Image (cartoon, rainbow, N blue to C red):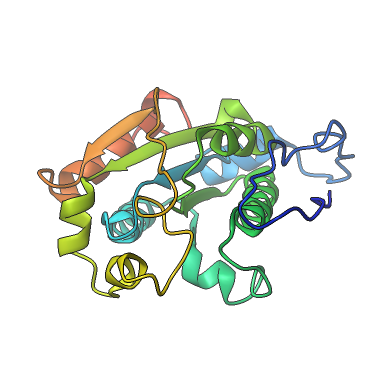
Length: 217
């Protein structure tokens, strides 16, 4: 799907296509066979939250724990994806939507092979996050909200991104000149200001087990 170009301050309302879910499966390996071999189901843990909320640290701590438990898991974060898959895209709303669409399509393909994917992006719009879940498949989409106040994030911003935005040197920074829309009904909310990473990881893994994305150990 190609998103038609619009002015950079306008956000497309749809990033999915009616044909996006129609894909022939030619693999000679069934989903059940993959689940038996890997002791997990392909699923995406989508971690959303403001810049500098601690999303990346949480994502990689979760990856470490899942790996230690014997699971096969991949992390997709903004820096890695923008350095390759989305390197020609900007941060305006249109390009951000296309960037996230590419991430969701990538996560879907990886999930189709029985692999867990941890996705960590600000993804500021609720409507876009809902469509990302639609692309990946709602039955295998776990939305985790890394909740932290803007002031707390400012204090933990090692890149100076918020300061640059407030000085007018950057545009399209969620929480500053565009809105970050908090999830209304996430699968899990992590209070990043007060909860340790280890406790947060335990809670996410508990959710994965309850949804039977991973086997009990």
